[in-house]
Amino acid sequence: MRYLLLITTLSVVLMMKLLNIAGVVQRPAFAIPSFGNISNDWRISQTYIPPDRGAPPTTTSSGTRGGEQCLLSEKKIVPLLIPGNNIGVTLSKHPTFFIYIPPYQKAQKARFFLTEWISQEEIYEEDFQLPKKSGIIKIKIPAEKSAPLEIGKTYIWGVQIWCEYDPLGESADYFSQGFIERIQADRYLLEKLKTARPLTLSTVYASQGIWYDALESIVELRSLNIENPQLIDDWKKLFESANSQGKEEFIQAPVLDCCQRED
Image 1 (tube, rainbow, N blue to C red):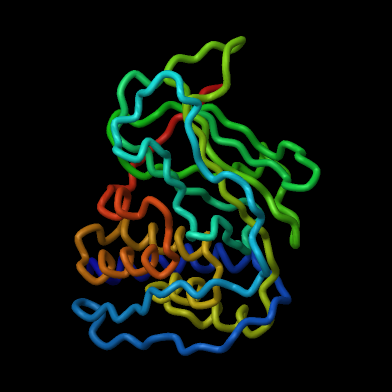
Image 2 (image 1 turned 45 degrees about the vertical axis):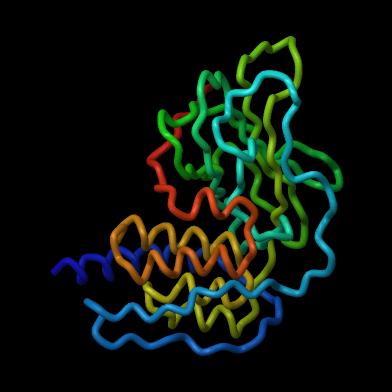
């Protein structure tokens, strides 16, 4: 019964995702793994294969202002859950972003931002309350408050944290940023997504280099099966294959039910 409920839930999620996908980007073929006994056999090959998109934009991905220090982690950075080359792609008009908040003390303010890279047009900005404990948080771009990402455009997104916030004062004490590009899916990929089992959806995305969708899919799986050893292993493989910066800190971290927006 437990696994029937899981499949039903994930099937609904998959159908909702497919309603927002259309496309034309050529991708290499691959085989979707088959499942034997779903109750004890989770054969997911969770390897991220970066798409051939040319050289990624070059800019600083993270840093500190050098003033007040409120992060307790050794590296003093706020890792974003992105590939090591600092850029990933999505099929979604309104994607979900994941950020690791390290242990901290006395941090007063956090801000998420999304900006079009070339024009520097602000797409979305959100102040939010930091979680009370360290962990991975997600930021979902609300459709009613943001224009959809445009196909073929590159965007900068990231987070800023102030240890002591003064609206008229200095810039954030910590910042991290990465890149996202929205692409179209070709007919072959669309067909693969339509026929994919809910448990293999993240594999389809990862194998085709669609980072943000792969990450969101495996987070959904883990939320329903947090102790499943195969999913824990796949989670590690995803970040290791992508050479994600800061993965040593967040691979073991929980995904938190967070965070409340500050309007």
